Length: 76
Image 1 (cartoon, rainbow, N blue to C red):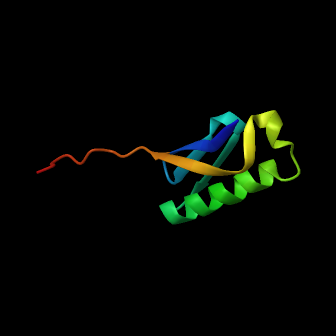
Image 2 (image 1 turned 90 degrees about the vertical axis):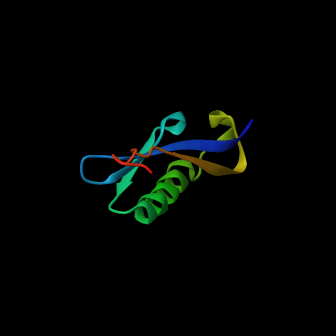
């Protein structure tokens, strides 16, 4: 059983996007803080009342966030 739900966060065209491919959850936000808050809520709502064993998850799993960053043009 997995203890973590992996989320990939990246910059979309207008907003930040967070995806959890393992459980089919996707959300967005104007800021990183808003995106993470929306991600928590979306994961909670998606799993609320579900049998976590069907997702191969332990009770009260954590969200592991992997963030994609663009390299600045001039890094010194």
